[in-house]
Amino acid sequence: MNQLHCQQNADYYPAERGKLAAPFLEKGMIIGVKRTFRVEAMVGGGGFGQIFRAIDLESKLVVAVKVEPKSSESGRIVLELNILVQLSHSTHIPKVYYSGEVRTYNFIIMQLLGSNLADLRKFQKSRSFSVETTSRIGIQCLEGLKQIHALGYIHRDIKPSNICAGIGEHRRVLYIVDFGMARRIVLPDGTFRPERVYASFRGTTRYVSLAAHERKEQGFVDDIWSLFFSLLELVEGLPWKSLIDQDQVCHAKRQMLANFQSRKMGRNFELFPQILENTKRTESVDYERLIGILKSCCGSFNELNDFEWDDHDEQYR
Ligand SMILES: Nc1ncnc2c1ncn2[C@@H]1O[C@H](COP(=O)(O)OP(=O)(O)OP(=O)(O)O)[C@@H](O)[C@H]1O
Image 1 (cartoon, rainbow, N blue to C red):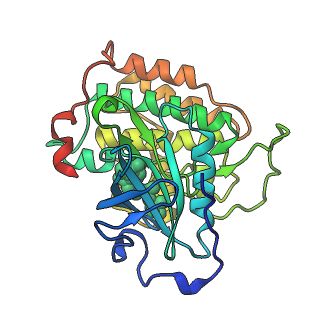
Image 2 (cartoon, rainbow, N blue to C red):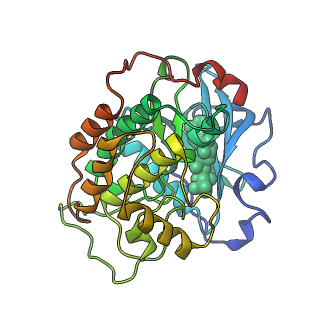
Protein backbone atom coordinates (compact mmCIF):
# COMPACT_ATOMS: atom_id res chain seq x y z
CA MET A 1 0.00 0.00 0.00
CA ASN A 2 1.29 3.47 -0.82
CA GLN A 3 2.31 5.76 2.01
CA LEU A 4 0.21 8.85 2.47
CA HIS A 5 1.95 12.15 2.46
CA CYS A 6 1.93 14.56 5.38
CA GLN A 7 2.35 18.16 4.25
CA GLN A 8 2.89 20.85 6.89
CA ASN A 9 1.76 23.79 4.81
CA ALA A 10 -1.31 25.85 5.62
CA ASP A 11 -1.45 27.16 2.01
CA TYR A 12 -3.08 23.91 1.02
CA TYR A 13 -6.22 24.68 3.04
CA PRO A 14 -9.23 25.31 0.82
CA ALA A 15 -11.45 28.26 1.81
CA GLU A 16 -14.12 25.80 3.00
CA ARG A 17 -13.35 22.36 4.36
CA GLY A 18 -14.84 18.91 3.89
CA LYS A 19 -18.29 18.65 2.41
CA LEU A 20 -18.65 22.45 2.29
CA ALA A 21 -15.66 22.83 -0.05
CA ALA A 22 -15.84 22.50 -3.85
CA PRO A 23 -15.41 18.82 -4.88
CA PHE A 24 -11.78 17.75 -4.44
CA LEU A 25 -12.03 15.28 -7.37
CA GLU A 26 -13.91 15.48 -10.67
CA LYS A 27 -16.10 12.82 -12.23
CA GLY A 28 -14.09 10.73 -14.70
CA MET A 29 -10.73 11.47 -13.06
CA ILE A 30 -8.33 8.50 -12.89
CA ILE A 31 -6.44 8.12 -9.61
CA GLY A 32 -3.84 5.61 -8.40
CA VAL A 33 -0.55 4.26 -9.77
CA LYS A 34 -0.20 0.51 -9.17
CA ARG A 35 -3.99 0.20 -9.26
CA THR A 36 -6.19 2.73 -11.01
CA PHE A 37 -9.68 3.93 -10.15
CA ARG A 38 -12.16 6.12 -12.05
CA VAL A 39 -13.98 8.66 -9.89
CA GLU A 40 -17.76 8.70 -10.30
CA ALA A 41 -19.71 10.86 -7.83
CA MET A 42 -19.44 12.38 -4.36
CA VAL A 43 -21.45 10.29 -1.87
CA GLY A 44 -20.60 11.89 1.45
CA GLY A 45 -18.45 14.30 3.35
CA GLY A 46 -17.58 15.43 6.84
CA GLY A 47 -15.75 18.32 8.47
CA PHE A 48 -12.47 17.56 6.70
CA GLY A 49 -12.87 14.95 4.00
CA GLN A 50 -15.04 14.07 1.04
CA ILE A 51 -16.15 10.58 0.03
CA PHE A 52 -16.54 9.60 -3.63
CA ARG A 53 -17.76 6.48 -5.36
CA ALA A 54 -15.22 5.11 -7.85
CA ILE A 55 -14.57 2.00 -9.97
CA ASP A 56 -11.47 -0.18 -9.89
CA LEU A 57 -10.59 -0.20 -13.59
CA GLU A 58 -9.16 -3.73 -13.48
CA SER A 59 -11.52 -5.67 -11.18
CA LYS A 60 -14.54 -3.39 -11.88
CA LEU A 61 -15.19 -3.38 -8.12
CA VAL A 62 -17.15 -0.31 -7.00
CA VAL A 63 -15.28 1.35 -4.13
CA ALA A 64 -15.28 4.46 -1.92
CA VAL A 65 -12.52 7.08 -2.00
CA LYS A 66 -11.93 9.19 1.10
CA VAL A 67 -10.01 12.35 0.14
CA GLU A 68 -8.46 15.02 2.34
CA PRO A 69 -6.18 17.93 1.42
CA LYS A 70 -2.50 17.52 2.34
CA SER A 71 -2.47 20.11 5.05
CA SER A 72 -1.28 20.46 8.58
CA GLU A 73 -4.34 18.33 9.46
CA SER A 74 -3.30 15.52 7.11
CA GLY A 75 -2.10 13.53 10.09
CA ARG A 76 -5.79 12.63 10.44
CA ILE A 77 -6.01 10.59 7.26
CA VAL A 78 -2.58 9.00 7.87
CA LEU A 79 -3.75 7.91 11.33
CA GLU A 80 -7.04 6.69 9.86
CA LEU A 81 -5.25 4.56 7.24
CA ASN A 82 -2.99 3.07 9.87
CA ILE A 83 -5.95 2.06 12.05
CA LEU A 84 -8.07 0.76 9.16
CA VAL A 85 -5.19 -1.49 8.05
CA GLN A 86 -4.76 -2.86 11.57
CA LEU A 87 -8.50 -3.54 11.75
CA SER A 88 -8.72 -5.21 8.33
CA HIS A 89 -9.91 -8.46 9.96
CA SER A 90 -12.89 -6.77 11.65
CA THR A 91 -16.44 -7.34 10.49
CA HIS A 92 -17.65 -3.86 11.39
CA ILE A 93 -14.84 -1.77 9.87
CA PRO A 94 -14.66 -0.98 6.10
CA LYS A 95 -11.91 -2.85 4.23
CA VAL A 96 -9.03 -0.78 2.79
CA TYR A 97 -7.86 -1.63 -0.73
CA TYR A 98 -5.30 1.04 -1.63
CA SER A 99 -4.04 4.49 -0.69
CA GLY A 100 -2.14 7.25 -2.44
CA GLU A 101 -1.99 10.90 -3.33
CA VAL A 102 -3.25 12.96 -6.21
CA ARG A 103 -2.43 16.65 -6.74
CA THR A 104 -2.69 18.27 -3.30
CA TYR A 105 -4.78 15.48 -1.77
CA ASN A 106 -4.26 12.22 0.09
CA PHE A 107 -6.77 9.45 -0.52
CA ILE A 108 -7.78 6.04 0.82
CA ILE A 109 -9.65 3.53 -1.35
CA MET A 110 -11.99 1.44 0.76
CA GLN A 111 -15.13 -0.66 0.80
CA LEU A 112 -18.15 1.28 -0.44
CA LEU A 113 -20.88 1.50 2.19
CA GLY A 114 -24.50 2.68 2.19
CA SER A 115 -26.06 5.61 4.02
CA ASN A 116 -25.18 6.57 7.56
CA LEU A 117 -27.65 6.12 10.42
CA ALA A 118 -28.24 9.86 10.91
CA ASP A 119 -29.53 10.13 7.32
CA LEU A 120 -31.42 6.85 7.49
CA ARG A 121 -33.22 7.94 10.66
CA LYS A 122 -34.31 11.21 9.03
CA PHE A 123 -35.89 9.27 6.18
CA GLN A 124 -38.01 7.17 8.56
CA LYS A 125 -41.63 8.44 8.74
CA SER A 126 -41.45 8.48 12.56
CA ARG A 127 -37.88 9.89 12.45
CA SER A 128 -36.91 7.02 14.74
CA PHE A 129 -36.06 3.34 14.58
CA SER A 130 -37.87 0.46 16.25
CA VAL A 131 -36.57 -1.10 19.47
CA GLU A 132 -35.48 -4.15 17.48
CA THR A 133 -33.48 -2.13 14.95
CA THR A 134 -31.91 0.00 17.70
CA SER A 135 -30.90 -3.11 19.67
CA ARG A 136 -29.35 -4.70 16.57
CA ILE A 137 -27.44 -1.47 15.87
CA GLY A 138 -26.18 -1.39 19.47
CA ILE A 139 -25.07 -5.02 19.43
CA GLN A 140 -23.14 -4.68 16.16
CA CYS A 141 -21.49 -1.44 17.28
CA LEU A 142 -20.46 -3.03 20.59
CA GLU A 143 -18.86 -5.89 18.63
CA GLY A 144 -17.02 -3.37 16.40
CA LEU A 145 -15.89 -1.22 19.33
CA LYS A 146 -14.65 -4.30 21.18
CA GLN A 147 -12.30 -5.00 18.27
CA ILE A 148 -11.12 -1.38 18.06
CA HIS A 149 -10.51 -1.30 21.82
CA ALA A 150 -8.67 -4.63 21.74
CA LEU A 151 -6.03 -2.88 19.60
CA GLY A 152 -5.63 -0.21 22.28
CA TYR A 153 -7.47 2.54 20.36
CA ILE A 154 -10.52 4.61 21.23
CA HIS A 155 -12.59 6.17 18.42
CA ARG A 156 -13.69 9.36 20.25
CA ASP A 157 -16.40 10.33 17.74
CA ILE A 158 -19.03 7.60 17.82
CA LYS A 159 -22.32 9.05 16.52
CA PRO A 160 -25.06 8.04 14.05
CA SER A 161 -23.37 9.80 11.10
CA ASN A 162 -20.23 7.73 11.71
CA ILE A 163 -22.12 4.41 11.51
CA CYS A 164 -22.97 3.26 7.97
CA ALA A 165 -25.08 0.41 6.66
CA GLY A 166 -23.40 -2.08 4.35
CA ILE A 167 -24.68 -2.67 0.82
CA GLY A 168 -25.49 -5.75 -1.25
CA GLU A 169 -24.61 -8.95 0.57
CA HIS A 170 -23.38 -6.83 3.51
CA ARG A 171 -26.66 -4.92 3.94
CA ARG A 172 -27.31 -6.48 7.35
CA VAL A 173 -23.90 -5.39 8.64
CA LEU A 174 -23.17 -2.00 10.21
CA TYR A 175 -19.76 -0.33 9.91
CA ILE A 176 -17.97 2.20 12.09
CA VAL A 177 -16.26 4.91 9.99
CA ASP A 178 -14.06 7.98 10.50
CA PHE A 179 -11.02 7.24 12.64
CA GLY A 180 -9.68 10.80 12.23
CA MET A 181 -10.17 11.52 15.94
CA ALA A 182 -9.02 8.13 17.26
CA ARG A 183 -6.32 7.89 19.93
CA ARG A 184 -4.14 5.05 21.03
CA ILE A 185 -4.52 4.77 24.79
CA VAL A 186 -2.71 1.48 25.38
CA LEU A 187 0.98 1.39 24.46
CA PRO A 188 2.59 -1.60 22.70
CA ASP A 189 3.92 -2.83 26.08
CA GLY A 190 0.32 -3.05 27.37
CA THR A 191 0.51 -0.03 29.71
CA PHE A 192 -1.88 2.91 29.49
CA ARG A 193 -0.65 6.26 28.23
CA PRO A 194 -0.18 8.56 31.22
CA GLU A 195 -3.34 10.46 32.12
CA ARG A 196 -3.27 14.18 31.26
CA VAL A 197 -4.56 16.63 33.87
CA TYR A 198 -6.41 18.49 31.11
CA ALA A 199 -7.42 16.86 27.83
CA SER A 200 -8.67 19.13 25.03
CA PHE A 201 -12.23 18.55 23.93
CA ARG A 202 -12.55 15.74 21.37
CA GLY A 203 -15.82 14.45 19.97
CA THR A 204 -19.25 15.83 19.09
CA THR A 205 -21.04 17.75 21.86
CA ARG A 206 -24.38 15.96 21.48
CA TYR A 207 -22.87 12.49 22.00
CA VAL A 208 -19.76 12.84 24.20
CA SER A 209 -19.50 11.40 27.71
CA LEU A 210 -19.57 13.54 30.83
CA ALA A 211 -15.82 12.87 31.21
CA ALA A 212 -15.21 14.46 27.78
CA HIS A 213 -17.35 17.47 28.80
CA GLU A 214 -15.15 17.78 31.88
CA ARG A 215 -11.99 17.67 29.71
CA LYS A 216 -10.89 14.45 31.37
CA GLU A 217 -8.81 11.80 29.64
CA GLN A 218 -11.11 9.43 27.75
CA GLY A 219 -11.05 5.64 27.98
CA PHE A 220 -12.85 2.73 26.33
CA VAL A 221 -16.03 3.42 28.29
CA ASP A 222 -16.36 6.90 26.77
CA ASP A 223 -16.92 5.41 23.28
CA ILE A 224 -19.70 3.32 24.80
CA TRP A 225 -21.27 6.43 26.38
CA SER A 226 -21.36 8.00 22.91
CA LEU A 227 -22.95 4.81 21.59
CA PHE A 228 -25.53 4.96 24.40
CA PHE A 229 -26.52 8.57 23.55
CA SER A 230 -26.58 7.65 19.84
CA LEU A 231 -28.92 4.69 20.46
CA LEU A 232 -31.20 6.85 22.54
CA GLU A 233 -31.38 9.44 19.76
CA LEU A 234 -32.14 6.76 17.17
CA VAL A 235 -34.95 5.16 19.16
CA GLU A 236 -36.67 8.11 20.87
CA GLY A 237 -34.70 11.35 20.48
CA LEU A 238 -32.47 13.29 22.89
CA PRO A 239 -33.79 15.99 25.27
CA TRP A 240 -30.80 18.23 24.34
CA LYS A 241 -31.27 17.99 20.57
CA SER A 242 -31.81 21.73 20.11
CA LEU A 243 -29.14 22.85 22.59
CA ILE A 244 -25.75 23.96 21.25
CA ASP A 245 -23.98 25.30 24.30
CA GLN A 246 -21.68 22.59 25.70
CA ASP A 247 -22.40 23.40 29.34
CA GLN A 248 -26.15 23.28 28.78
CA VAL A 249 -25.84 19.93 26.97
CA CYS A 250 -23.70 18.57 29.81
CA HIS A 251 -26.28 19.75 32.35
CA ALA A 252 -29.11 18.10 30.36
CA LYS A 253 -27.18 14.82 30.24
CA ARG A 254 -26.63 14.89 34.01
CA GLN A 255 -30.32 15.60 34.60
CA MET A 256 -31.40 12.73 32.39
CA LEU A 257 -28.95 10.28 33.96
CA ALA A 258 -30.03 11.19 37.51
CA ASN A 259 -33.30 9.39 36.85
CA PHE A 260 -32.86 7.56 33.57
CA GLN A 261 -35.89 5.93 32.03
CA SER A 262 -36.41 5.00 28.41
CA ARG A 263 -39.87 5.46 26.91
CA LYS A 264 -39.38 2.77 24.25
CA MET A 265 -36.50 0.49 25.26
CA GLY A 266 -37.99 -0.63 28.59
CA ARG A 267 -36.71 -1.16 32.13
CA ASN A 268 -33.74 -3.36 31.27
CA PHE A 269 -32.14 -0.56 29.26
CA GLU A 270 -31.85 1.45 32.50
CA LEU A 271 -29.02 -0.90 33.48
CA PHE A 272 -26.96 0.18 30.47
CA PRO A 273 -25.86 3.61 31.82
CA GLN A 274 -25.55 2.16 35.33
CA ILE A 275 -22.91 -0.29 34.07
CA LEU A 276 -21.06 2.52 32.28
CA GLU A 277 -21.13 4.70 35.41
CA ASN A 278 -19.41 1.85 37.27
CA THR A 279 -16.70 1.34 34.64
CA LYS A 280 -13.44 3.22 35.18
CA ARG A 281 -11.41 4.81 32.35
CA THR A 282 -8.75 2.13 32.28
CA GLU A 283 -11.12 -0.78 32.82
CA SER A 284 -12.31 -2.86 29.92
CA VAL A 285 -16.01 -2.65 29.20
CA ASP A 286 -18.32 -5.63 29.85
CA TYR A 287 -19.39 -5.80 26.18
CA GLU A 288 -21.14 -9.16 26.62
CA ARG A 289 -23.32 -7.90 29.47
CA LEU A 290 -24.31 -4.82 27.47
CA ILE A 291 -25.12 -7.01 24.45
CA GLY A 292 -27.25 -9.19 26.75
CA ILE A 293 -29.15 -6.10 27.93
CA LEU A 294 -29.85 -4.99 24.35
CA LYS A 295 -31.03 -8.48 23.45
CA SER A 296 -33.39 -8.47 26.42
CA CYS A 297 -34.88 -5.12 25.31
CA CYS A 298 -36.37 -6.51 22.14
CA GLY A 299 -37.16 -10.16 22.85
CA SER A 300 -36.13 -12.41 20.02
CA PHE A 301 -35.06 -11.13 16.62
CA ASN A 302 -33.66 -12.66 13.49
CA GLU A 303 -30.29 -11.36 12.36
CA LEU A 304 -31.15 -12.58 8.87
CA ASN A 305 -34.01 -10.09 8.60
CA ASP A 306 -33.27 -7.02 6.51
CA PHE A 307 -33.11 -3.72 8.38
CA GLU A 308 -36.21 -1.54 8.22
CA TRP A 309 -34.50 0.89 5.81
CA ASP A 310 -33.37 -1.78 3.39
CA ASP A 311 -36.00 -1.15 0.70
CA HIS A 312 -35.16 2.52 0.43
CA ASP A 313 -31.41 2.69 0.78
CA GLU A 314 -30.49 3.15 -2.88
CA GLN A 315 -32.60 6.28 -3.30
CA TYR A 316 -30.49 8.16 -0.73
CA ARG A 317 -27.25 7.96 -2.71
N1 LIG B 1 -16.64 3.86 2.93
C1 LIG B 1 -17.68 4.67 2.77
N2 LIG B 1 -18.62 4.43 1.83
C2 LIG B 1 -19.69 5.26 1.66
N3 LIG B 1 -19.91 6.35 2.39
C3 LIG B 1 -19.02 6.65 3.35
C4 LIG B 1 -17.87 5.84 3.59
N4 LIG B 1 -17.15 6.37 4.62
C5 LIG B 1 -17.83 7.47 4.99
N5 LIG B 1 -18.94 7.66 4.24
C6 LIG B 1 -19.94 8.74 4.35
O1 LIG B 1 -19.28 9.99 4.37
C7 LIG B 1 -19.59 10.70 5.58
C8 LIG B 1 -18.33 11.42 6.06
O2 LIG B 1 -17.30 10.47 6.27
P1 LIG B 1 -16.19 10.69 7.39
O3 LIG B 1 -16.88 10.93 8.70
O4 LIG B 1 -15.21 9.60 7.30
O5 LIG B 1 -15.57 12.07 6.88
P2 LIG B 1 -14.73 13.15 7.71
O6 LIG B 1 -14.44 14.25 6.77
O7 LIG B 1 -13.57 12.49 8.36
O8 LIG B 1 -15.75 13.60 8.80
P3 LIG B 1 -15.47 14.58 10.05
O9 LIG B 1 -14.45 15.54 9.62
O10 LIG B 1 -16.82 15.16 10.32
O11 LIG B 1 -14.98 13.71 11.16
C9 LIG B 1 -20.12 9.64 6.55
O12 LIG B 1 -21.07 10.22 7.43
C10 LIG B 1 -20.74 8.63 5.64
O13 LIG B 1 -22.08 8.98 5.36
